[in-house]
Structure formats: C-alpha cells, structure tokens
Image 1: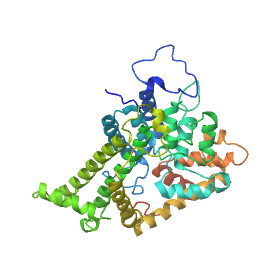
Image 2: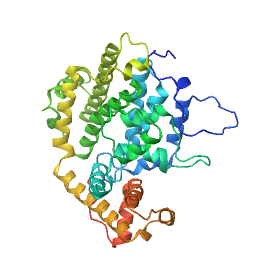
Image 3: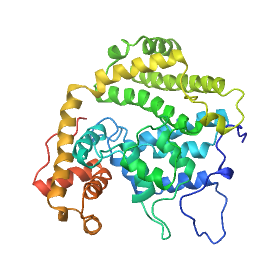
Image 4: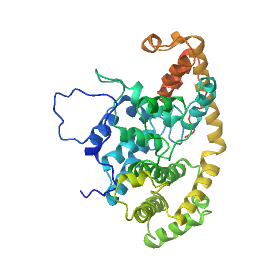
Length: 386
C-alpha cells in the first residue's frame, strides 16, 4: 500500500509508555495493528454493545449501539485513510476507541456524572476513554493499562483538535506520557473525528426513521437532503419508500466521504511530513466549506427533531436519575460495589469519587438499571424509548 509522506508510520512510532517483554518475538503485526487488536479484545470495547447510541436501552435488535456505531465509524475511516495514503490501522484503532469513555445511557449518563463529579474535577467522556485504556483496563502482567502507542493516545486525546485545558484524567496521562496537547494531531486522528460525524449524521437518521421519530416530510425540510432524495427517486422510481430512504442514507455517506477525501487532499498538497501536519495550526481533514455548512444544518435539524424530541428528553431524565442515584449510593455505602472495586477504593477525596465514577462509567445500560433495582428495590419504569 502506498504510504503518503505525511502519514503516521508505525516503524517510527514514539513508542509505548512501558517497556514490554515479548521474548524478542515481534510477530507480523505493526505497532498500530497491535493497538487496534488490544482495543478490540478489551472488555471496555465489548461493553459498547450494550451502551446507548441514540435510543436508551433499546428493545429492538435493529437499532445501533455504541459498538455497532464504532464499527461503522471504523469502516468509513479506513476508506478515507486508504484513499489518502494514511495508516489504516491507526485510523481504525482511533475510530474503534473513540466512544469507550461513554458511560451508560449516552449523553444523559454523562450529564449525571458531570454533575456528580463537580467537586472532584469533573467528568469528560473523551478523557475517560483514555483513562480506561491506559489505566483501568489492565490484562497484562508487566504493566497497567493496554500500553498503547503514543500515536494512539495522542489521537484519542486530540482528535477534535488541540486541548488547552485538560481535565484531571487527561492531565494525569499527559504528565506521565506527554502528548503535546497544544499541537494538532495526525491526519489519522482528524479522519477518525470526521468519520464519526459522517456515521452518526446519517445512521442516526436511519434509526430515527425506523423508530418513527422522523419521517420523510421532516427530512424534506432540509434542502440538502431533499436534493439527494429527489436523485434517489429518479434513479430508483420503482423501489419501495423504505428502500429509497435507506438509499438516501447510503448516498449521503458516499457524498460526504468523497467530499472529505477531495478537500483533505487539497489541504495537504505539497506536505512531505507528519510534522507539517502537526505544525499546520489548523484542521486539515474535513468537509469542504459548502458541505460543512450543510452538515451543520443537518446537525441542528437532528438536535431539534431527534435528540431533543420530547420522548427522548423524558427518557433521558430517567436515565440521569439512575446514574445520579447510583453515585450517591456508592458514596454513602461503598460496600454495595463489587468486592474487587471495594478493595481498591481510595480513602480520601477526590480519588474516592473518581474511583466510583470509573465503576459507573464502565457500566452498560442494562447493568446500571439492574444495579439501581438491586440497591433501591426498583428502577424507573419505561427506561427505553423504542
């Protein structure tokens, strides 16, 4: 595979935080392939299958969860990375890991943890994802964490750009293994971020239609979508409406992917090193100005019609209540946590609260509901909105 001069190169990785004893056998995988595989085999990654993407604790088998969303992001990210001559394995690792720090119930659960942790330095799902993979998830005998490469940790930390004021969790990792938080990250990290946007912009439409929260008339209010749908109707006039709508989602993804490839390729023309990418002082991978405007309009529409739908808000309140009550319960009686978590509970604040937040953040929707029911004798009714 052709590797662009501005791509991340696993052969020139800045290495890992801890030295590893592998008996001199490196095997066929690159450093970034090993990172990807460590993420896939982690418990934290498997838990994403039962964590909210859009709909809380969905009963249906066809709705996306954080796991299926992450896989879809990785698929989009790899396509873009391959076309640009970037490292596909690093891109895939970052795509697969980008949501690992999300607590149960998505943004509703995150809001609850943010409020509960105000006295202990706050909570941020991106920093929590890095903390999870670098400190909490520890399957190896010779070091804590998964011991990912500097490039993967850097990409997780900065995929949305430089970080000016890292919270405590990210600051701890940065102090131990400096991530150059003030610089822009690799193109692989920037592609992972835009692949996330492409995936949830379009797949959330698909799930919203399936759940009945959106319909075709809603989508036609956005001229960008209306234009695409008219093209779909012209190409497939005899297809069912359901099939046409699914084709709309596919065509939207294709349009956005091709736009990102073209625009990014133009931005990096003439660059001959990853150092130039990091020193550019701006985002290089992303949508063209015209598509960026349309994408923002689409996001605004989705917040108004789907994410802030009255039923979504009502269910989110119940979910926030579950997380808030669990935090209070563990604060008042830590013995209600599993024995291994109790054994490692720090005696003093803020470490005690951070330990409790680590436990809650790792929960799936189902586990959190069951824990609430076990401790309080009941859980909110109707804690699923599809």
